[in-house]
Image (cartoon, rainbow, N blue to C red; front, top):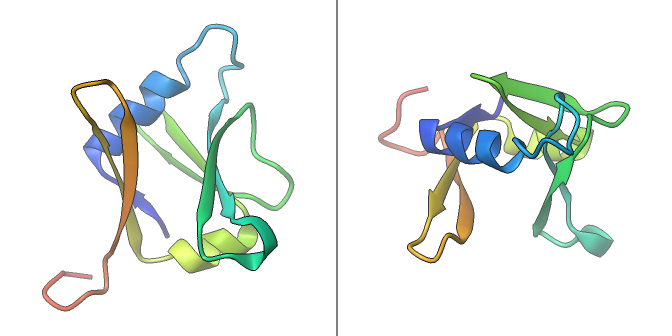
Length: 100
């Protein structure tokens, strides 16, 4: 199952803290357009039918089923640059030199 770093948790909680969003809002990750290898990330008010829900310390990530399988054994991280732009990255937890 996808895991979240503490930085990812903090960024997701900040992004979904908008009072105009429902309390169950989260980040949804889904496959790219036309079967591309890219992933799309968006703020979602709730999971869609069939989504896998990853929740950690109040941060929610909704994964479409195909994406959930692809991101199994991976970690989502987030960094904020000095301009305030957010970059999400994925790391493989099964890579050599990492503990499973």
